[in-house]
Length: 450
Ligand SMILES: [Zn+2]
Image (cartoon, rainbow, N blue to C red):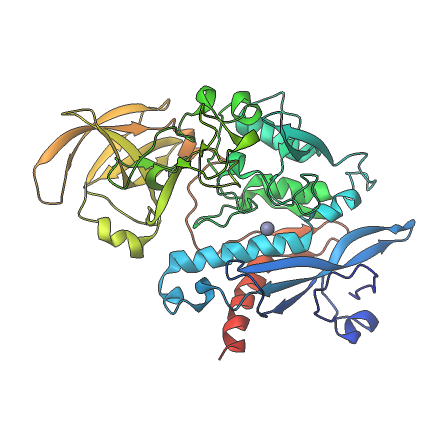
C-alpha cells in the first residue's frame, strides 16, 4: 500500500519516508508513525491523528479512510517515568488502553473527519452529527449514524434516542463538536475524554467504526461497559439531578471519613466528589447554590462516586492493603458491591469476586457463595470488620443479574485486548493489529529512552 501526499498537514512534524509514497510496503493496510517527543503539558500522556488519506476517484475533494497516522507519547509524564510501571499489570493495562484510545483517533475518530464518513452505500452522510444543547444550555453534538443510534437505544433502553452525545468539553473550535463520547453518559468507555484506570472497548465505539464506512468490527471481542446500562431516557436526556441521581450521581458532601460507596460501574469504591467551586457553574449548576457541583468538567460537573487510586477491585497490587477489611478480595474477577450493616443500617462498600453462571450472578465472600436474585436486591451476609474477628450481619446489594452477566456488560478481565477489525474496502483482515501496535509503541518508547 502506498500513502498519498496531501496538503492536510497533520503529521505533527513527523515526516513520512519517501518510499511510502513511491512503492509502499506490500501487504500493509495502515502505517503508524510512533514518536516520543516532549510537549508542553506534563499531563498529556499521548496524542495522535491520521495524516494521510485515500483519495476517492469519483470525487478527489473527499477524503477516505486514513492510510497513515502518527502517535506521540510524551516522555515527560509521570506515568511513563514510573519505575514500577511494569510491576503492576493493572497500571500497565491502563497505558495500553490509553494507547488504544489514541490509535482510535488516528484511525478516524476525529471530528474533522466526520464530513468524510460514508454510509453503507459508500455515500457521504447528509449529516453524521447534529447540534444539541445539554441541560438546554451547553452546546455539544450528537452522533446520529445508524449503528451508533441502534446500539445506544438498546443499551440505555431508550427507544426514542436520536443520537449519542459527544463530549462538550474537548471542543477545539467552539462549536461543541468533539472527538470523544460524553463522559457523563459513558463513564469509563475508552473513548471518553478522561483516562481512568479501567477503559472498556465497548460496542459503542465499534459501532462508530462501522458507521465510518471504512471498517468492519468484530463485536464478539467487545468489552462490557456497565455505565448507564438500561437506565432509560431520563438518564440520557435530562441533566443529572434529583430525577436520576441513582447509582451514578450523588448529592452529598463527604470527607475521607465518610462511608464508602461503589462508583457507578462498580469497579471501585470511594466518596461523592461534590465540591464547592470558586466560580458559579452556569449551565452545569444542579443545586440551589450554583457554586456546588462535581469535580470534573468532562462529567459536566455531575457529582459522582469517585474511586481512590487504591480501591480498584481488579488492582491486585494496590488493593492488597485492603485484604484484611470486610473479607475483601481484589482480583481480576472482582467488582465493588454496596452493603448495609445489619446493626445500624449504615452503608459501606467492598470488593468481592463475582461469577456468572447461566446469566445469574453470584458473589464469593470468604468462602461462601451468595446467589443474587435475577432482578437484583438485598441478600443477607455475614462479614467481619477485620479478618479473624467476629462476624456481623449485613445486607449486600445485588444489581440486576445482567448488570454483570449481560452480553454488553460483562466484567472486563484486564489484560491484552483482542480487538479485531477487518478492512471492508480491500477485505484484508488485520487481526489484533491494534494491540500489537500499542504494545509495540510502549516497547519502542522504552528502547528510545535507554
Ligand atoms: Zn482522545
